[in-house]
Length: 259
Image (cartoon, rainbow, N blue to C red; front, side):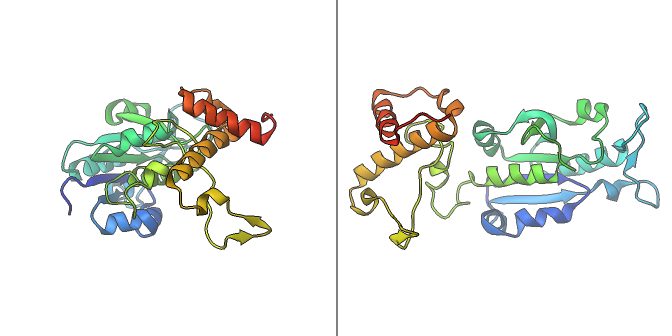
């Protein structure tokens, strides 16, 4: 394995789901190249009865079950022990901190993580207090379990690992990231061959060969796309004079404010 690789242990009742991350695309290549190491632990393997029971009734009664504390804590302990260094233990929960670009870049800097995927109605509050360091959410809605949320988090943070992308600058060109200006903006429109498609042509500036004009156009489009689609995000930015001029140009060319 590579020195300084990221290690991510997953506690889940469905380890096979994570082959979507470890076997395909950019994340799969990062795993094969040793940039990130992902391993799964199932609480079922730590169940004490012959049925492999991993859920139990809540003391409050009513509908729904909770994950059993014993098998869950044993799986978390095994995942922590597997890491070379003490990991951050994260529970994927709709009650957690909202995952955004800032959160992704923060998590991507950590070398050791354990992601805990809940099922049923969740986990015992005492497990949260004694075993979990942080709670994170991918949005204000409820999923059947934490696996999909963990895969979203994994995909996002693996992109920021050195060597994970084919081009080292690619992550800095994504929406919400701009390594040149420090702004958090949406991406600009992108084009590929053919030059004309569906009656529409590629903007002339992109084929003229003037790199400075291309950079200016891209920044103007990023500002404009954010103004159109995410005015709330744009309101959080501090634009310098040049950036404000570009935004004003886009607004003038567009002709109307978004509703």
